[in-house]
Length: 171
Image (cartoon, rainbow, N blue to C red; front, side, top):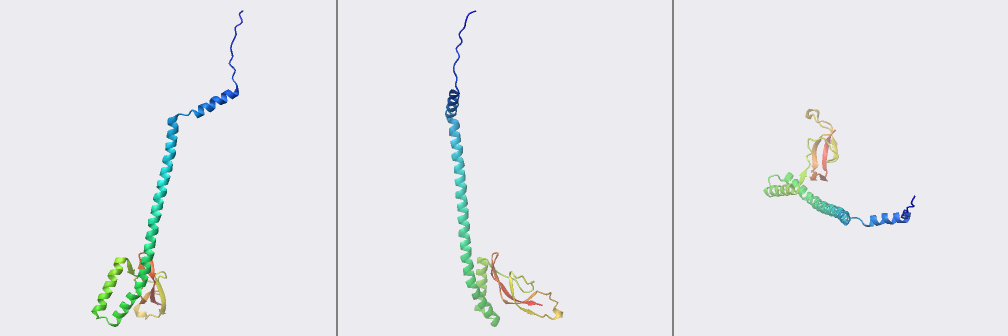
């Protein structure tokens, strides 16, 4: 029998670890670039969304400030309308006062100010301020809490109440 020599290569654990590390570091450059591209694309999309949200918030804030200013101006104009309506009650035939009332109503319509309808309506504390409660003759058949007279008109600006109407309510 012949003795055959067999060469056995020595393999150590350290060598195996080195090979694994080399495999990990020698990652495919295309895959690396694809990962970087995906990461950068994600950052871009997030920044774009944040910018859009900031623009939207800014526009809403500007609209809110403009609306608040408009409401402030509208509240200051209401006494003028009250004075014109009082003048019309005392002198309903005055053409100048009638013209002024029409002009104010037209301006209110353009701005978005609407009068709160009161007489004949049921009292709504969000829109009406009851300043007096009166007995109504039975022949008029008015339901309780129905508004029978308006002392001062109330106005709304869009969905916001500028001023509640001061009203007289049936008992």
